Image (cartoon, rainbow over all chains, first blue to last red; front, side, top):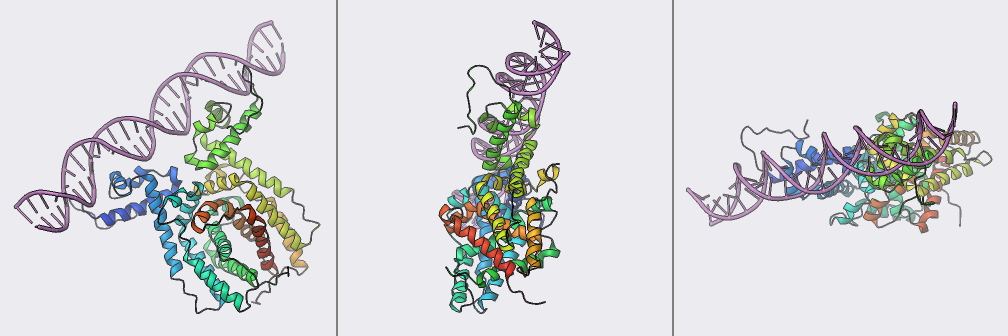
Length: 221
Length: 221
DNA sequence: ACAGTAATGTACGAACTAGTACGTTAGTCA
DNA sequence: TGACTAACGTACTAGTTCGTACATTACTGT
């Protein structure tokens, strides 16, 4: 069961660099996410592609660079989602909720991305560090958060003096954990954090929590 | 630089099954945490021990069982910490804060544990599932949370109708993420979530957030 | 049409790695 | 004290896995 199975070639092979590259990236994403960096097999990736291992080295150079390319594309996806985030017309509370929902939805919809990031963390983010595309890019979500926070604090709705990066970390942590630790959490506590029946529950819960924090009475210090 | 370097044996070898086993577990913990399950090398573990690879197979059976044993011991540590948690004499708010702090401190102090859990998640928690010691044990923290929540709700301090497992997930997620995603978060946003100078900041922040959520005004539904 | 090149396939090797067969030694208990 | 066994060491192998040398074919521009 290959991920891509369009028109089969009747006789000779077809040349399409873009498609071949994309197909390799698709399969590699699955394989790395499935087994981790060292657990992933280059031969297995090649086998599940319509091309051969030779092409992986031809286009990407090696396993390491292939993983980097996979990461770059995965990060590209979430950055696009965040860039399309339009919350200018919403009041600060609704805007934060929207941001939470978008992050929540993206993480849930892209478990492979979560796994890739987990894997990259185990390896000390060395591929991100080596990538020109990924180093210190930050995230469009950060700008959005900054604007929402400024507006919320200005209007007096938000009592907390929160930093945008910190808030991003708080929101991400729950969305990420829910997917990344689904297996162990389920095995230990018998609860599936990604159970569709609980989806709305957790989505609301995180929004409530963030809003509660941002609007809470603060002890004067 | 071996992890254990007590008295060197002048001449012949010494027999100490307990010490040998413990030493293998120590080194294996480091090696698995360093490189992931497939990235870890049995030969490397053996080399950094005062014993040989043969002993790993003699005591544990294989790489897979060794990893399971490493996991079992790591989970045992946090369970002990949680078991010593004494919050009966505190009011609900202080008790929750204490629980948050203990979780926060443990995760920060045991990055290897976090990495092992991340690795186990990449492999679908199959070792936990196969372990007699680890399946469905839950966590002593859960009982503590249940008692605190009950007391807080009874006294009217806590407005939210929160489930203990969910609260545990919320608290764990931030504590876990801070350590597990330190590398990628640092590489992407230029901020070290485990920076000692920021430690108190994040520790307080999480407590504030949880308390804000538990004590917030809730819209009637 | 044809030359040049990008794209592709095949077959293979060198290095690594989990695991084991076999032999040895240090405690310990009768 | 001597025999028995748990604990330990050495040397090796079978299988795997990343990577490449070499050969080939489909496009593209002129």
